[in-house]
Figure 1: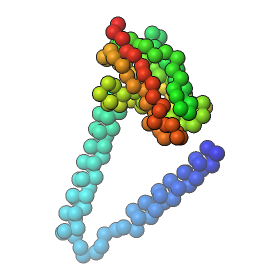
Figure 2 (figure 1 turned 90 degrees about the horizontal axis):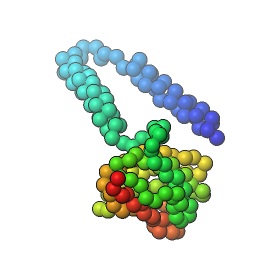
Figure 3 (figure 1 turned 30 degrees about the horizontal axis):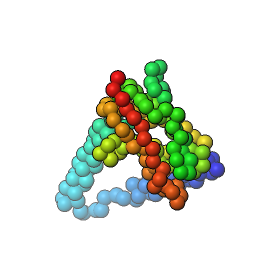
Figure 4 (figure 1 turned 45 degrees about the vertical axis):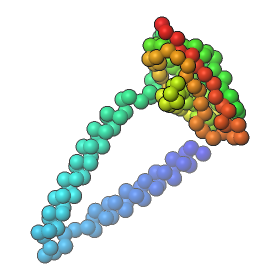
Length: 171
Ligand code: CUA
């Protein structure tokens, strides 16, 4: 299945690129119409580069704080999580505050949305629980307390009951 999806995507990308090239080639100067047109061109070119610069800055600033997966380090606490209709199977439910935790999340049936929320109900992070895959999230709890485990992906009739709890204790 994946190779077909890739081939179709590449074909569509090539089509879009070809249309862009066609537009670039056929758009030229309209004779006897400088002045206002040149001004507009200047503004367009300027705003294009401002947007590019803004995009680069926003990308770098926003990428860093997210709990993207990296290799687990020695000393990290590893939690294995399996979602099934309609409960979470978590092999460890008490972790230390201030210690990096690696959540290894999968599913035994359909896709589930593994999420951790604090006592105020603010979601701290989430990842997909997918059959046949293990998604890793690294997170360090800063405060001790009870944290809610939720499912954020509709997975059937009792989806809303797919809740659990993780306790974070002081070091
Ligand atoms: Cu599992 Cu919704």
